[in-house]
Image (cartoon, rainbow, N blue to C red; front, side, top):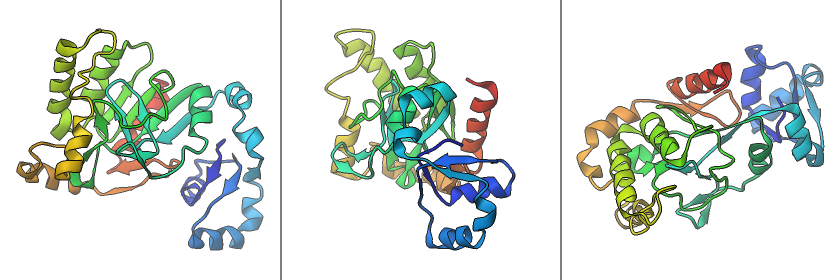
Length: 258
């Protein structure tokens, strides 16, 4: 593993014999993780190396290694633009960190996210992201617990269909299909169709009603079913896994190199 920050999830990889060695810039363990690290320091010394950020995040180093990079997204739009840092475009949830360095110079760049949040009030897949950290030219694969979209060698329209059908949650899929059709009718150009009057309407609706879905109150059965899928942290750095389905999608992407 070549990364910027190592957290507690590294222990799962070591315990399962899935990781032999890791290069990092910082160790940011929880109090429990710190206790284990110091207790087993002699064993971990042979598994970690600390390097300055000028090396770990160096674009040339990342390119020469040929990294398969995995980062998380708050939201992605139908054309593959990713927002990693801001809620509703203005409230910072976290910094961009080294995700830009790794994404733009990777052999394969992967972004992962649950398809919904807050019990379905938020959709991670929207017509247009409210903030762009990683644009469509750097994002190659997007994964949710629903599946994966391989955006390489796809036109914007082809990629949009993949994201909607493979990654979006079923309770939002029809809404995205409707927007995509309307965008093609209303758009000035057809290369990357958008209906600018509606592109950010989901975020406006969230601010006004507390949900991106116009019929959220009528979808209790679907939401309850979604909530039965226990969301937990993946052993893969910063990944999210829902009943193993997201991890399965990641493994499929790595095995097939798609």
